[in-house]
Image: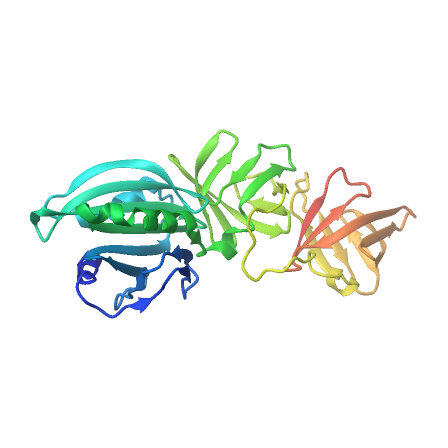
Length: 354
C-alpha cells in the first residue's frame, strides 16, 4: 500500500493526539517543529520514516507529514523531490505547478507545488506542497496538503512549520565536519556545508561520511578518504595522496553534536601512552620513519638512537652523540595517532601506532 493511501485515510475520522501550539520533538530525534494550535499528532500504523499531523478548521482539513531518511550516495535535491513526487504522478488530474527556492528553518531547501483530483473528482482539487531539504546526511521532506479552496486558511500554519523546522538526524556525526577548513599542506581550502554540499578548489559536489570515511561525489565519480578529527584539526588519507592531508577549522563550529561537552584532545597525555612503536605517515622518504619509545627509556627515531623523557606535553630525545631535541606531543582521541611539533621539524609530524 502506498504511503499516500494512508494519508487519504487521515481525512476520515481517526485517533489523534492533540499537539496544541507547542514545539514537537520527534521521539526518534529526527526533527523538531513548532506546531500551531489545533494540529493533532496522527501516527500512521507501520510507518517508521516520519510523522503525520492533521488539523480541522471550520469544516476544512489540512494534512502535514514529515519524512526523514538517510541520503543516498551522491543524491541531489532534485532527485529527492522527484522521488517524493512520484506517488502523485499516477493520480488523476496530476498537474505540476513549478519549483521554487525555499527554506526549512535556517536551512536551504526546495519547494515543489502540484495538484491532483481528490478521488478522481475534477471538482475537488487537492493542493500539495512538497519541501525537500538535505541536512547532516539525511533527506527531509515536509508534505503539506489541503483542498484547493481551503488552502489559504492554513497558509500561516504552513509558514510557521517551515520557518521553525529543525533537523536533528545525523547531527552528532556531521556537526564536527561542517565548516570551512584551511589546508596545512598548502592545498586549496575545503568547505563542507550542513546541506552536504562541498567545495575543494575547483571541485564541487555532494559529500557524505560514516564516522571514518569521507566521500566526495562529483559528476565524474567520487573520491574517498579515511578521516580523523581532533577538535579543530582534520587529517585525510587516501591511496591517491602522497601523504596525509591536514586541515584546520577556520572559525568556530556552527553546530554542536547533541550531548557533546567541550574537552581537550584526550585529557592529560601520560608517559605510558607514548610507549611503543610509531610510524610516520607523511615523512618525505622512501624508507619508513619509525619512532620507537621503550618503557625503559631508550629510543630510536629513524637513524638516531638514544634516551627519551616526557613531561607536561614535551618529549625530549637525547641522542647517543649528545644532541638534545624537544618536541611538543599530543595524541588524537583514540590514542592511535601522535602529533609531534617543534624541535627540528619544519611542520607537524603525524605518526600512527604500529
